[in-house]
Image (tube, rainbow, N blue to C red; front, top):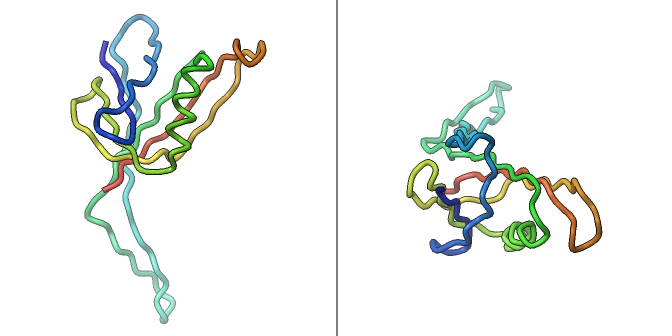
Length: 127
């Protein structure tokens, strides 16, 4: 099984495995949004400046994370800086990313030691 790494250095922390149904190779939803600056000119017309680089974006989600697994994600988010990301399901390239969206959802709350979490997280490449 391929690993996903995320951390402040290229060594990174191996993230908990994503649990896929049927054992098939996952298709990670990722995209590339256009970076455009738009401004209003004195005449009232619009001017657009298309950037030459467009960052990649990954939408990852985990189900039924334990308290310890969820704490890893909270620690990475608390760093509040760009991180190194490697997704071995796609390739072995290390990329600089930031956590854009972080949406935890407690699904089973049986006290502090037995809680389970679902987590959706969006990473965006920085250049």
